[in-house]
Image (cartoon, rainbow over all chains, first blue to last red; front, side):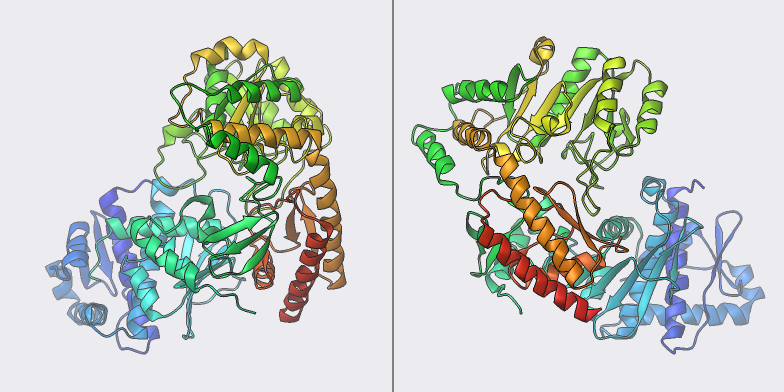
Length: 227
Length: 409
């Protein structure tokens, strides 16, 4: 599937929003899971369909933190739209807040991994990276916390972000603390220096981590973020 | 046991401010064991080195193969020092360049001429250009996953590439002669050269030796299809046979590239070739700022003399064979499914059912805690300076690491 660069970026933003809302709820907060649905004419809906943006609106929202959704769907699905909007605002509040909480890092990290998975799956620049791979599971952890994220590559030949994995991890990336994980998501990660200094530990299939890391750095350059 | 690493970390922090990534390339800590291996070396003699925190290591990497006779080998250092006192880089080459070319052509049976550079990449790239010049054909075949250097046609990295860089490079799986035959048929009269290492010393994977008829069939296919056969003997040179690795596997390339063991730590590479390629070689521009460096050439001349007269290849193969047997014996003692792959002078361990290397990485971490520099992702090297005592000490510590590994599982 060939996707335009604008569509790819908005797709990555959409998935990062969906993943952020999923993690928000996993953290015990109230809100909607903002499942992204891709509609004709470059539109994307979140949640129950009340919140719809076009690609450019979505990119504006990710870079500036605010944009206007499509008015008619918003009014016709007012209850859902308001609940979805509240979820979005809650995510924004947590991510732009000063406190470095576990909740903030979890949401940011999951969101970033989700965006990376989109580029890994659909950016033609990386189509050669995974052609010969079969089952791969990259596990992301932070020392001192209990949660993990799993980026899984299976028969579908696509990467999927999951809360659990039915297979053993083939690569493991462990951040030494919340700060290191957040620095990574914020684009301040030095992929050569930080492992050397113990801020992140890499185990298992290192070439695979190199590939995903390379894509994630590219994502950070081209996909706007409110962080 | 935890090794001191304050100085190493302090240096690395300074480095990361002024050098991208702190340390880059194949020696970047990320490619090894970042919190178990030191980042910086203070000094090295024989088969041991001391890091900047004073920890002493028994070394199984030999400067990633650049050291064959041991660190600071006195005869080689004396030869280098003798030249250094006269100067290193001049307007013209030094006489030692002629001596070195003569020595190489005398010791390598098919070699009629030689040229020099600094690194393996310099001359693997030049060799494929020479093959194109000679044949007028654009394509090059290489083995899949085989490393030939950092130039765009073979760069294994991810960044800074465009698809056109490798658009004339064809690949086949090591030992898969049917795939090779198919490529030759599909690109009939378009293939200038086939470049291969003597065996497949992959990173992050077990080493794979050539199958029984591999080299004879490869040679035959090349001759039948007017494809020049280029041997990349950069890593393996003088570790398998004193006359070059083609002698170990009983074939004859048209061109061969050497580096690492040639200079024993001094930056030099050489490409040797058959007489019929000499005219074409004159047409392919070759130079570099310090490529006539006489100090490296003097060191290489002495290193080559030692390799040949003392049959160092046979020696490291023999030492390696003892070591490999002892390591496998230890593994069996602890009921660990470990085999050593590759030739004994360049062994690489492999645990069964450990394709993602978790177990090997842990084994190498536990070994590092005991002063053994065992790399988890790259083939090891046996230094000819290793004595029985060194190898026994290494096996003993490796056994302790295996015991700890067994207790963890």
